[in-house]
Image 1 (cartoon, rainbow, N blue to C red):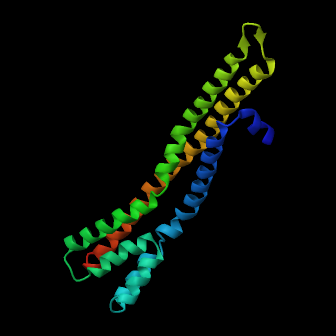
Image 2: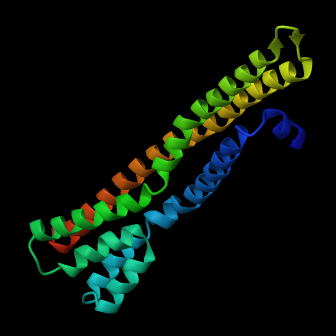
Image 3: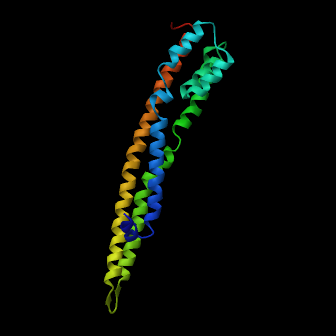
Length: 201
């Protein structure tokens, strides 16, 4: 591996850094965007049970906020339990915007890596081509410099693609995952509002 890095030259280092960041984001988002961590299905029945037992205290709301992103949405609804349906929905929407922002954290960086990595690979290709043509002189050509130019060009091109493809795949996967979780939270929040206002048992 070290021989490949040496053969690719300094242009490969930004790609190595991008790959490390990309892998870290992918691992972190896989852990964070689990359904049971974001929108656990057991939470709504539990809140419904609290309401049936006589209401929700400030301590319960604080515990809900620490529970999960869906818990934060539910907490904003329960803070306005005595307000109208419209006020409650506005509170839910305001909290949901912040929750969605947290769910999308680092995805812009991952998308940027997917977009920029081929360009960094292309930069390495251009640098390799410059070295390649620099091997030709009036008296002949330097075989070692010629071979190095080819190595720099090809290794950086390949590395740019290797970093970009998984980054783009997981970027699209996580975007779809966030959309799915948002729909799930929206449905559960609507059910909670209907339960509070007596439209659903």
